[in-house]
Image (tube, rainbow, N blue to C red; front, side, top):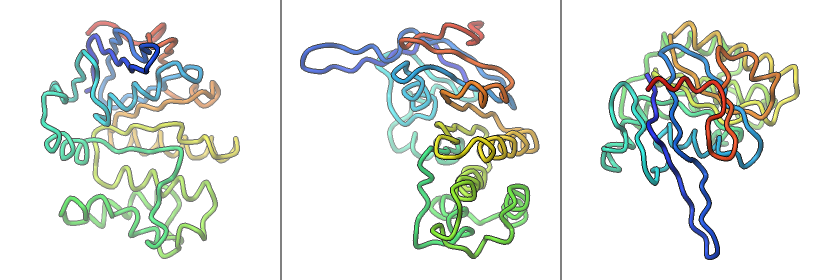
Length: 225
């Protein structure tokens, strides 16, 4: 489902060249829930951005369903990303003037597609948001807002869900609840989930833990690529 080959990302400043990623090889199977862990500055966020096509690598390849995503032109990549990948960020990024339901279906409408209301309502129910669909974001707790962000990521029926510190703003119990729901939805809809976190306890909920240090995979990357 998801594979990188000799992935590199270098950043140049006026005084030095930073190697954020160095020859990263990893593979993730369809339906797998993978956690990428590492300290701040280890390259895990950079790696997630590469996997999602949000930033182009210095060298190397990223394959999604055997498609080299960086062979696509920018506009093609944007469309591919919108249809194939769901993003969940630490900042919930909800639109404050839209209610819960409107926030969830916004990416579908931006793509000009019909909302599959049965599917969306199933996600809403699974995430315990049925009674909140008319609420505005400022009327929700942090945990509820993160659930809306998860529902929005799932609503487009993505094959892959990429989560960047999705529980960073939540207390430990809410974090466990939200991650449990994310795992359940991933299994139910056979979605591949890649999550980055610095929280070892949260990482233990994944099927596999990939450890990154100084831009290199040091454990769990499954290098048979």
